[in-house]
Length: 330
Image (tube, rainbow, N blue to C red; front, top):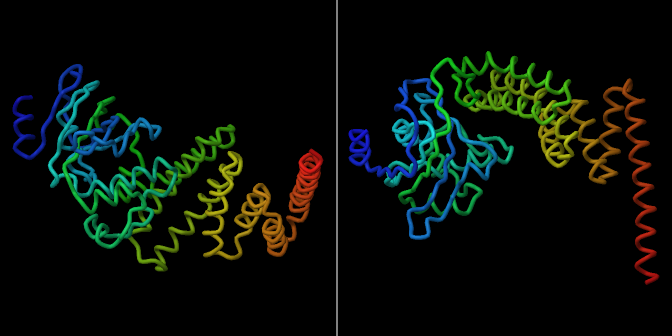
């Protein structure tokens, strides 16, 4: 262990053990999965926190040897035992790419596309290409690189072959093979009424395909083929979001589909339901009309949705009259 600490120091990394771990130091061979909580802090007297995985809902998972965009994390994790808590002060040279990595991790925590705003280029090129990362604290760090402190709690270490890889850690070939399986798992969870779990599966499958699509020229045959695979998964994801009442996300995704595929009946129908839910009556009626135009056989279903919308609008109008009457009579 002393040799490991000395090697870290020689490379501009200072380690401070806060809580000793248990057992022997794992054999971190390629393919080992480390599950850990992290807290990222500025190297200043106040040690302002930039990111904390505990507030983002789930711990971080990293596969050793998969060329994670922040190599220093792999370096420091390989010095830790399970249940160990340690702080690592890392020189600027190790953390220049942290702003772009943090943006992706924040997007994932927020349920957004982790590749949002990225193109198929290296992290340094992305930093120069994009003026803003969308987060003021990351923009500031990107403009003024500085040492960072990572507080790491190692939760679990799993050897190669003892776990199922997360989509982001798979090779391109593994992603293509995994998508149908993940899709099916999502369908089974949906049938069981586990809507949020199903949405997570659809999201993982979409992330696999979008990662592959990012490497293709937009509009090329391969890009289009991947997009055609993404679309039904995205519609399934939207169905889950309708049930969890996340209507504006449905509006965004369905509109993005319809910008490319103007005859997608399911996208019009789901967008119409989302518009109706947020009281966009005119837009909902227009979308349902488009559904009828594209597929007249859906007339009974559309009629039911329109009746439901009209009933809700009348109830809202009655409630507003009562509310306003109370205001003006008081």
